[in-house]
Image (cartoon, rainbow, N blue to C red):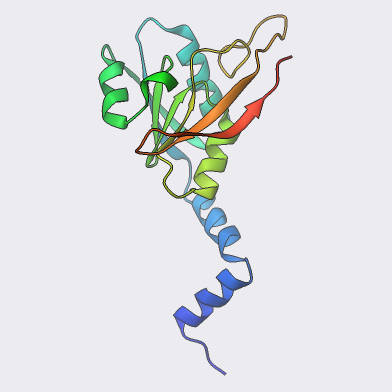
Length: 159
């Protein structure tokens, strides 16, 4: 029996193989571009961007932006979820000190209706806000859509 392309793809999806194939193809395409908009005077933003770069998954471009708040408005980042920097990654927004693993998960899973992820404020011990003594505040990574309604995407305990 000969299968056409549509039947073959349907079989791969049914068997659960397709997500693995698409993830492998995406990884084979090389690093994902990440445009990180930072306030020119903010040091923690540069540290976070370097963590993104060091992961090897992202081609990071820093943009010193004197009006990063306008970008947040245009990108739909809810006011209560804002932080010091905003990254545009693929078709998503990463606001603040979002862990790299959560961004990778977002890109792998591509949940319906999600515009971006945010870590509101600047929690102590979050990526880019590490403390010499290892202290970390509990924090959550929120997923948000066009309506701005938050959903917990990941949570991290204090340390």
